[in-house]
Amino acid sequence: MPEQNINPEQMKALQEKIKQMSPEELKDFQKQQCVFCQIVAGKIQAKKVYEDEQTLGILDINPANPGHILLLTKEHYSIMPQVPDDELAHVFMVVKSLSNSMLRGIDAQGTNVLVANGVSAGQRAQHFMVHVIPRKENDGVNFVLPQKTMGMEEVEAIGNKLIAALGGNAEKEEATPEIQLPKRPPVVPAPASEPKKIGQPKKDDKETPKESKRGIDLDDIAKFLGVK
Image (cartoon, rainbow, N blue to C red; front, side, top):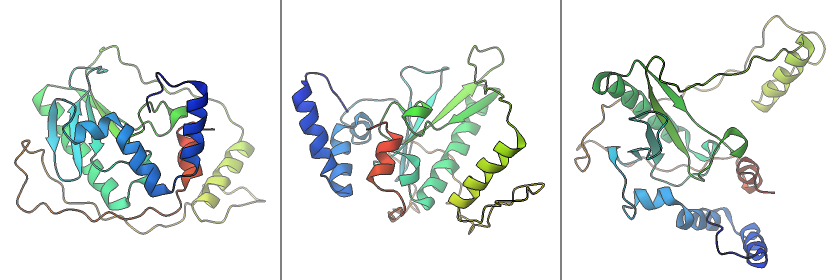
C-alpha cells in the first residue's frame, strides 16, 4: 500500500479504519491499492505471456534472470492460505506448463519456483503470486538454504506442533522413528493445459466458482503481512 505523502496522523487514522473493516471491505480496499490488480484489469501495462480465466503470467521488469515470470491470481488474495484449494491446484498446473515452456523456448537448464508467503519470507507485494525463474549453469542466481544443527528433542517438539496444527495427535512422551502426518483428502487438480495465446481463451474454459477459505482471519493476514 503506498505510504508516500501521508503524515503520521493520517497513517494512524488509516490503520484504525483498516482495523474496523470487514474481510470483504478489507479485500476491496486492498484491490484498489494493489498494483498487480491494476495490471490484471489492464490499467497498467505489462508484458503478458500467459492468461486464462483465473491466472495471468507476466514478465518481471526486474528479473532474477531473463524470462522470469510472475504468475498472478486474477482474484486478489494477499497470502497463499486465502487461495481456495481448487484455484491453488490450477495455479500450480499452470506453473508446470510455464516451467516446461522455459526449457523448450529459451533453453533454460532448470527452473526455480518460488512463493514468498509473508513479509518475513520476503513478500513485498500484497498480492499472492508465484515466481517462475529460468536457470542456467553459473547464472549468478544463488538459492542456498542454510543447514542448521538441531537436536532430536527439538526436532520432535517442532514436528509434534506441526502435526497438531494439521489436525493430528502430537506425541508427547516417546519419540517415534518417523513422524506420521495425518491423512488428508486428495486434491483433484484442474486439467493440465499448455499456455495459450493472449486473448484467445479455449472454448471449454469455465469460470471456477470461488470458495471461501475457512480458518484464515484478519489477524492471520496481518501477521503474514507484518502489520502490528
